[in-house]
Image (cartoon, rainbow, N blue to C red; front, side, top):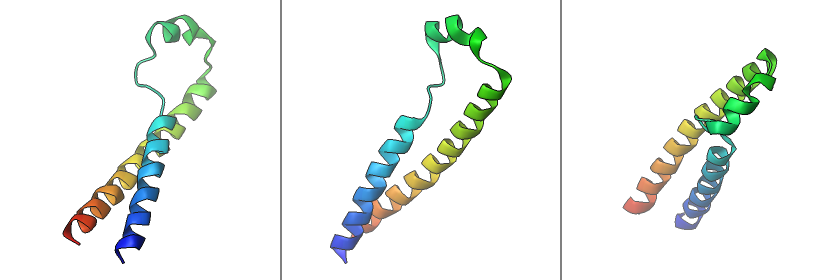
Length: 75
């Protein structure tokens, strides 16, 4: 049982890392100020929906990760 939960914990850890790395930064910095005029409305709308989905996935995967960590701690 512990081995199965440990494997799920490792998968959740890797998935959480990947989801966080796929998110765009909140601040673009100087490069965003220079290239910001090239963005159209459609690309900004797509990015916001993709970022919103990634943010929602991050919350759920983080919750699963914390729960699995607590379960492993109590076992």
